[in-house]
Length: 460
Image 1 (cartoon, rainbow, N blue to C red):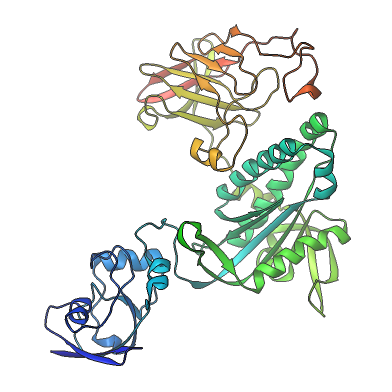
Image 2: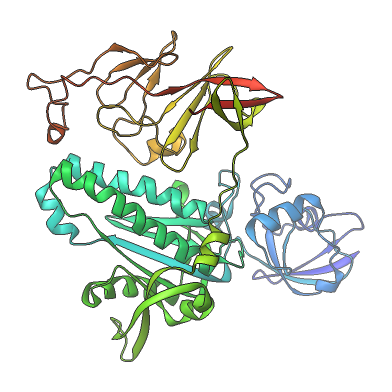
């Protein structure tokens, strides 16, 4: 029998050979939580081993899986899996019903973490003069504009390995380096540069639609933060806590006085100084600080770094029947009734697989030049509350545009039914685009064929 002392109860009990710590505790009347019944599914039986770590065998597969998911320290063990081999002094970490709800993993996402210190890059952005801008627009237009911006920036952040921590009004916070990516500082800067480029492409659209000058400001900082899951019940989320977050927010705000769009801290600059081109630097006293600090205005990545980080793998092409064909992906990667968006230099192509055929078409409605489909999955788009979330495909291979319900033939591109317009020829909600009733344009479609197990798309 092995002696164990449990805190904060100051209770002693004994563990028999082959018995788990949880089994022995419950047999002895020590109130260990165990929401999943001892199957390593909830983590509520976790204990901190204060003395006797050497007497603990290595984690088994089930405990290792939970420990890796929650980033548990070596001294934190699951009582339901631990079979001690020497005397222990442990502290129960789940003491009451509130603790049990907070720590139980039975209904948690894979992103749940118990708390750990990491070096991360924090990205803060907001919309310049948003209060004034929002006063010029209807509430619907404000939400549409923000969601359109967030949808595109979210893709950029995720492609660069970042994690979107929070959306706060017109502000966005993201974290780079949660999973220990060595190049997290560079990827954070790359995401910021790409975000500004995306905003520059959106500007003409927002100017023509709403008559506004849309712009953003971004601040980046690098340092140590505590990464963990905060919240209660169904409102938990993974986040970063610490001074690095506060400073990133203040650096973003410093853009306004500096007349810049992207500023990074000295700490972040030190990580990537040889990889970026800096336009200028400013000495400022950040809000809440009595000392001046240097901030750097990043213009772009150096060409060799940009080429390495953002290089696109060229798609294989062949000539066949007088047309250039591009290899898209293995045919079994797309299941019937699924779709995929392929990005090319000048346009995006949507590929849809039917029961026994493929269709491919330009992901831009021919009248408003807005995308039929967002890059994000339908469930993610719904979460963002984007209006007009889905264009639809009919059973007879027709594409119904989500913007004002024109229907196109997916094989020929011909118009089956033209747009539902107002009497003056404008689309509801898009009066700024003018009368489009007299310029019906067919959908651009691309032929598809299967060869050697791959889908090929004919571009010209």
